[in-house]
Image (cartoon, rainbow, N blue to C red; front, side, top):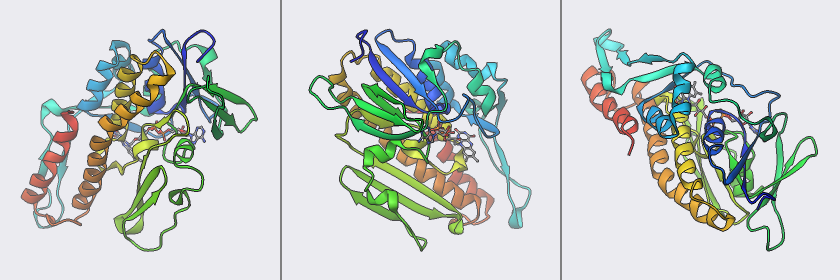
Length: 322
Ligand SMILES: Cc1cc2nc3c(=O)[nH]c(=O)nc-3n(C[C@H](O)[C@H](O)[C@H](O)COP(=O)(O)OP(=O)(O)OC[C@H]3O[C@@H](n4cnc5c(N)ncnc54)[C@H](O)[C@@H]3O)c2cc1C
């Protein structure tokens, strides 16, 4: 527990997932959240990101200041429409209804427009995590020591890994010798890696050009969880990874606002996993299947009516969140 009696929550890194949660947790006076980012500055790469209705609703729940960041970032309201190729070329395949409007923003702008000020003393750049280890001793219930590439070390009651698909925190959770982390594949099949404390799965997609990875883990190695792409990287066919990261942030925010003692963190993180796991896994599968339909690798072929019947419900279950 921190010296001032606050729970020390460390966020590894400041992509969309980490930055959203960081802003949410700063509201709670019993928490002391800090963010460690590997890059020299707090910014985003990439171009546009579409935040669908479910992501917008989660941002609203996180508070009006956070919800307003989409508009402050100049987000543009969009509907979605697709035309076909093949014998029915040019025909409309689907047109997501008006009430399911997404908002599209520039990633960098969105990150920049998340509410300020975040206390400078809580934000650390140029900090790449190289190791995490449990702190020994009974008084340090589940707390962790985080080692950085520059040789510095930081202690926390809990670590939240928002460090993306290539991050370190899932290595800590699964353990460095977990077979998933050394996995190699040579043919196009789904591989599952069963190991102590964790399960890892990957599918080769798109004729071998894309790899989908799923990590599921339970750890006794202190209080550590993953969120965003670090927890459930998915193919981008339905543009839903950032929306899922925002939903993660909302669930963690709701749970952590109730956690007043480090001993309650286990229960909170277990509840987080139970709530988020089924939904994100379903969306991972749906993304993959949509990719197959969109590339004419599914039973629908290029028949407009079949494609439309197959695709439309796949967005509805994501956008109208449970
Ligand atoms: C082409 C494409 C289009 C997409 N379009 C959409 C869309 O329209 N809508 C949508 O909802 N989603 C979309 N997505 C998915 C979305 O971009 C991701 O799900 C989202 O950015 C994940 O955010 P994150 O913060 O979890 O991870 P990231 O954005 O990957 O951030 C992780 C951060 O961790 C850092 N890091 C890595 N290792 C370490 C370490 N050891 N120590 C410290 N830091 C570390 C990285 O440098 C990075 O800054 C798209 C994805 C792609 C590829």
